[in-house]
Amino acid sequence: VAKEFGFQNNGFSVYINRNKTGEITASSNKSLNLLKIKHGDLLFLFPSSLAGPSSEMETSAPPGFKVFGAPNVVEDEIDQYLSKQDGKIYRSRDPQLCRHGPLGKCVHCVPLEPFDEDYLNHLEPPVKHMSFHAYIRKLTGGADKGKFVALENISCKIKSGCEGHLPWPNGICTKCQPSAITLNRQKYRHVDNIMFENHTVADRFLDFWRKTGNQHFGYLYGRYTEHKDIPLGIRAEVAAIYEPPQIGTQNSLELLEDPKAEVVDEIAAKLGLRKDTYFLSSEECITAGDFQNKHPNMCRLSPDGHFGSKFVTAVATGGPDNQVHFEGYQVSNQCMALVRDECLLPCKDAPELGYAKESSSEQYVPDVFYKDVDKFGNEITQLARPLPVEYLIIDITTTFPKDPVYTFSISQNPFPIENRDVLGETQDFHSLATYLSQNTSSVFLDTISDFHLLLFLVTNEVMPLQDSISLLLEAVRTRNEELAQTWKRSEQWATIEQLCSEYPHPLPWYPVAGAGEQSTLHSSPLPVVPWILYPAASWQLLWAMRLETRPPCQACGSFQ
Image 1 (cartoon, rainbow, N blue to C red):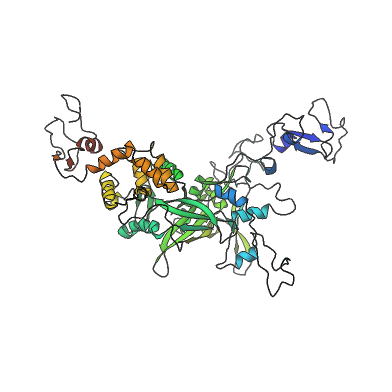
Image 2 (image 1 turned 135 degrees about the vertical axis):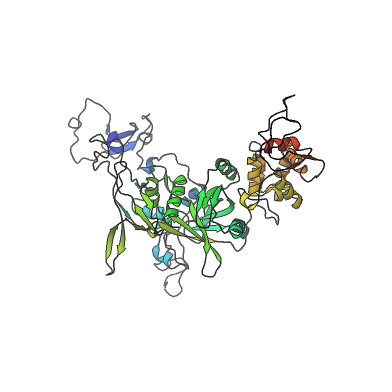
């Protein structure tokens, strides 16, 4: 029985009767005939923790039986909250159709389920995709209450461990061969709305495009909240945009390796934010699928502990009114599986089409189909070579609130955004000194509550504050001025202020030798750098920053 149900140990008991009498104990000396068990008899399986006080074994349930225990999956807070909500759509009594009293209910006013398609189609605007939690309610409804529901992730790979034949490409069988995939339009979506907290967040991101005309990329950081316009819906609220290192042109975009990626995620998490979005041809669908695979959605109903993703894609594009519009998307779970298992390719000459790979000696690829309608109106099944990417995309509405929300303070002279050196905007202590001098608010929390400034304080190479900034991040997250003032009195902030105070003073100056010239203090040539003038008090520090390759003094061994 343990082998049949996939138990890892015998953490269960088998009984002949439903009332837990006639327990069948494990024994190698007893046969079914000896126990008088015939074909067709019912046996009752119970976890050991429920079998009675005499049982000392621990329960071990198979992955599919969620009521008996699933992998220890910690779902997102929004998922835990929505799973406890009623979710039903309550309707008031219709004065024309309802013929009962104020306490009665009929078909015209009885509450609807959150997955009711007729209700969703009559919303304004109509909702094509039910929310993910409404989809779960649909699966777990009915007489059995979804007792054996398990959300299986699609796999396009050959199952390992099949010993009945040689490995691919020399052999394959029905046990290890992945099933063919027929692409369907996904009926649900994991995120139902994307909302920017205020226009300033988007405008600062668009400034790069306005000044260069080049494509640009950014990770949107925010939080997931309840979207009350859709039953059991989820909204991604965008509070800040982080722009990683990249090379953009008018027609292409290349992401570079980001050494600060993990630190940015860590700082965002301490601020109560998480990476939920990035800013679709077939190649972009593959990129979106790759990001969604890297950010899975934790789900207690999946044997793998995750199902789909809440990571969404937001695209800034032009509209028919010649204005900039934001459009939100996700790719379906089927597309995520095809991308994860490297089965989907872009079409170079037709960006609106994808192409399902063919099997080779290195990789077996299952057949991929999609359904279409021919010119006679008949539904036909087509091989996905090529494949319209519209079968892989899920639309998500993108909005701005009527009443703006500000997780971070808004300044007329904001701190520069990271990785914008091509525009001449750099993050250094000179820009920090300028920012602090122009923002003289008496409330320190308002001055310091800038996402890009906080990242600079943590990631700068001169004096990174990664180990001592937790108190400040907590103050920003909770909007606590008292905590911010406590951190302001720390030694670290005093040092930062001292570094900034050196920049505005023009005298005295120490000239630095030009490229290839001989220094009067050193016999070796200096590195190739332009002429720079340094304030005296910060000369030694800036030497370490800009002229790290200069050799020490031959007389005393120190930098002079």
